[in-house]
Amino acid sequence: MRRPAARFRGPDSIIACAWFPRHNKKKHRGGCVKPAPFAYAKARSIEEAVALLGAHKDARLLAGGQSLIATLNMRLSSPSLLIDINPVGGLDHIGQRNGSVEIGALVRHAQAERSAVIARRAPLIARALPYIAHPAIRNRGTLGGSIAFADPAAELPACLVALGGEVEATGPQGKRCIKADDFFRGLFETALGPAEVLTAIRVPAAGADTRVGFAELARRHGDYAIVGLAASARAAGAGLANVRLAFFGVGDTPVRARQAEAALAAGDIEAAVAALDLSPHDDVQATGAAKKHLAGVLLRRVAKQLTGTEP
Ligand SMILES: Cc1cc2nc3c(=O)[nH]c(=O)nc-3n(C[C@H](O)[C@H](O)[C@H](O)COP(=O)(O)OP(=O)(O)OC[C@H]3O[C@@H](n4cnc5c(N)ncnc54)[C@H](O)[C@@H]3O)c2cc1C
Figure (cartoon, protein in one colour):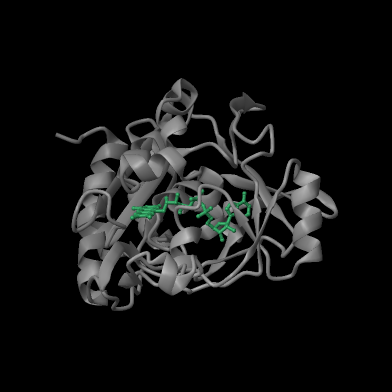
């Protein structure tokens, strides 16, 4: 007899339903599992994780497992080796340094939600976190995993771009920093090299003149967004400067709408909506035209958050 397993949203945003046979030791001799066979290694340091990645070309890092395990179970990926980085120390810190907030790769979404530093100094991330999935997933999922996975409909990659943040990557040549605008290269594709581990993200610490805005439209709370918008700006007199609008769910990566940013900095919300430089494609959730319309709706809401005129 077969019964449905959990419903997962695959990386291509198609909702799939995995089926598996009832556990039957005699018939399956314990060998019936959903993923393809893989080896498992615990990394106890970054150096060990980097060395394992270098030695096994099709290995994958395991962080919270909230996206990776689903792709394994649906056999959308079949790495020969999983490198578990959870035992690596020093990757779960949240702190401030040189005007930035630094968040270690293994900080869980739930830990970030409870952080006073993130609430005060990275308020855009604080606003976005409750929209990510559900509490059980936020208890395990990590900020590093979300950024490295680079789902185009995910909240945190867009926040990183909206804040003009950066990614710290550690590889065989040591550490390097990659600007958020250069990090997301394509669908689930980033600037991380094959033997690099994302070790932290950094965003500018919010000051008195920082303004942020966040909104998304999803079918149910916790679902990936149909369209979303993360935004930051600096208050300049009665208006805004340094406006950064990062839409998600409208392309292969978070998408900056630069003409709309310029119009918003000039103080004209309707001109910003008219200037929206987005060309979303149809997907399983909505047509490209519907997404573009919804992006305008979100832009009006977020513009009011940025200007402090939200009712
Ligand atoms: C039902 C469901 C609903 C969800 N809804 C949302 C949602 O609405 N919004 C959203 O943003 N997310 C959503 N997620 C995903 C969730 O946020 C994950 O936590 C996140 O995408 C991945 O984090 P993780 O730590 O679980 O990574 P994992 O699943 O462990 O890894 C994901 C990928 O990133 C790589 N990786 C992980 N860590 C690193 C690192 N430090 N350096 C380099 N590569 C790394 C892995 O090798 C893997 O390829 C949902 C997940 C589920 C199961």
